Image (cartoon, rainbow, N blue to C red; front, side):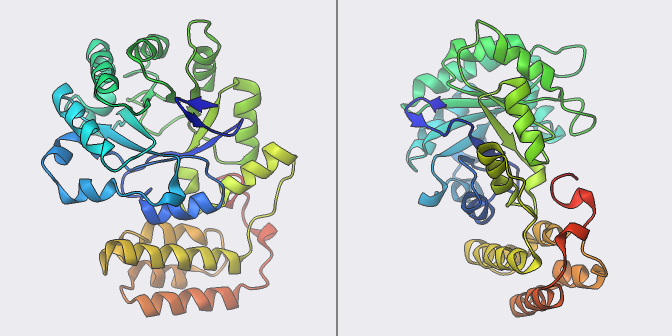
Length: 339
């Protein structure tokens, strides 16, 4: 698969951008487990052009993350163009346009999925950004605003005409948010349409190695994008790669390996964001790394309440010792390959 000059494996795996989740520390551990491409947390174009410190920090790139895209959102073409030019300075590999975020504070202001209600503006914005940067431009969107206005084929055609070089499609409408099931048949219909030549990346409900293989085989997408299922489970990328490439379903990592990953992730989060913010923003991850372990409630409480780095690392070491011989196959079926 190619995005402009970027060469990706035959069946590439993307980490989906998720606000306050896919920060640099988390991207680092996902890359080590086999994610092929990374995209930043979404960045508000208006915040970026006003020199917002948080927005600027989101654009910092670790070489291990490449190929890496910076994702921008906004409702004004002029701001998106200026933000794209600013993003170029940090030398990402591509620019990604967020046309799919369903959050009310974004979509109801005409940005993200809000542009699903104004396809001419979406197309004009994409074309303006493409013309403003020398980098490849990609986009991420949804099927439509609601089930009455599913226009994903028209969206794909418009964005392709505007110069977008790859399109990620989440198989839900804005109105669905994250409820119900993703409709992969509609993603497949876009991919199969003779007028669509750009790579199509499918997103939604990929929670297992089998799901990923099915997405490639049954729906013929060029790549898949995985989001919520990776939280606390960055090794899902390795499981998918082993199954797709070699037909092997690997076992879930043992607790000592999970602890090692959690400690690395925690350390990077503290280094990246400082104390105590680095700990606050790790809590959603620490609470998921050990999902399914028996008699774990008091330890989980300690992990998500303590602000003392040493106490957290000591707790993680204790978990590694306590569950060193725990048989991962005893976990509930929803703890790794399905959840």
